[in-house]
Amino acid sequence: MDFYYLAGSAPCRAVIMTAKALGVELNKKVLNLMEGEHLKPEFVKINPQHTIPTIVDDGFVLWESRAILVYLVEKYGKDDSLYPKDPEQQAVINQRLYFDMGTLYKSFADYYYPQLMYNKPADPEAYKKIQDAFGFLNTFLEGQDYMAGSQLTIADISLLATVSTFTVTGFQLSDYPNVEKWYENAQTVTPGWDENWEGVLETKKWFEAKFPSK
Image (cartoon, rainbow, N blue to C red; front, top):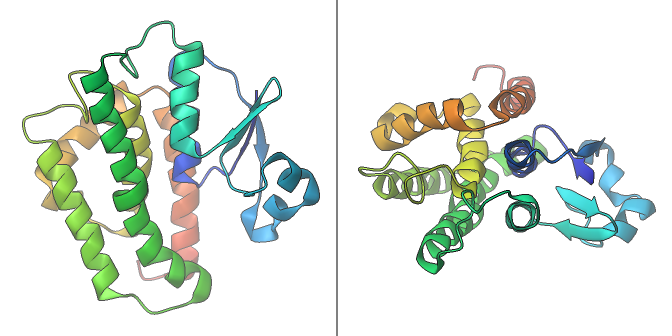
């Protein structure tokens, strides 16, 4: 399975960890977005939206990380533990995945990307949305060890990739004790955590280059 990715990308790392949990081998193909490699005609032909992560599985092409996670589990899972077939359990996982995409990860992108890519000043209102998102996440985890149910699912994996990225920006998880507790546990129970962390450290280098004081 060809896998177009960048190690620093949280959505890409979510795919890596899920593949690891399933025993799926990825033929990794790095795309350097800063060099515009995702805009090359050969990649645009594969994915007209020219985004990563993108997989090509025996001719089947799919992008959007959370769609990829579901596909991988449904096609290659030996059981349904990472994405249970029970409609209510699955609905909660879906909610968490959509929360990650549309609220938590979006808050990261909205606050940091303008600073990193366009040298814009920090926007306090955008930062407040990060705090609000973590507040919601903290509430979701009240009395819970996992994001959705009583075991590791792709909701944990996707959000682990995102939350771990925040930790190298100087954002304090200690202000959100339920998130902090979940995060410590998720590191130990999620296959592929070490490779995820290697990617997070790539992101850290990027931040340190742009914000030497952070």
